[in-house]
Length: 243
Image (cartoon, rainbow, N blue to C red; front, top):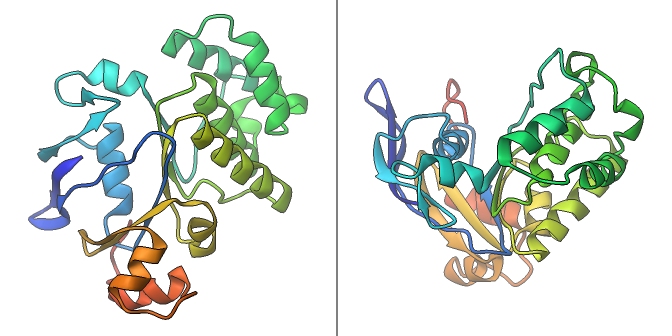
């Protein structure tokens, strides 16, 4: 992504932002409320139209090759909203059809078991709890083995067992070559999983690199936590801002 700029009523939410996530890498995206994290992710996914800048997903330009770019992408929002009238299994069938996944049933069964949804196979989307909706979003995102996965607070609503399973699944996904962009306010989660960190503040990039590089650049003591670095490079969030 290069020079992404998004404004709302002349107020910049993201300004001249550029970054990349390599295959097999987990990039942790952090910043205060109002820093532009959700706006950035929704722009990459195509939910928000691009105003300025460019986005490439697995080599495909989002503006000129939208179909190919989105075929290589999976998106897990902070509060997934499945279709009320489709069952869990029907969501996987729909996802397989959408992405052209052949012989999808065995993999769907594995994912239902992996994310503890087998017993909810015939439950309607409108009947699912917040945690179950989150798990269904994971299963659907994993089904077509995307080149890039974007996640916005993906562990919200999960119980401790679900959190442990999701963290392992994210690491395994990256180990198979998927580029993962993981946005969360849980700095311990980012510190545990991310290979590199991108910190946004007021719509601008203030740091991109490894935790070790952040410590060196700020001349922080060895072992300084991401939380300490976060507070050193960001400002308090505006009270009315979001994302």
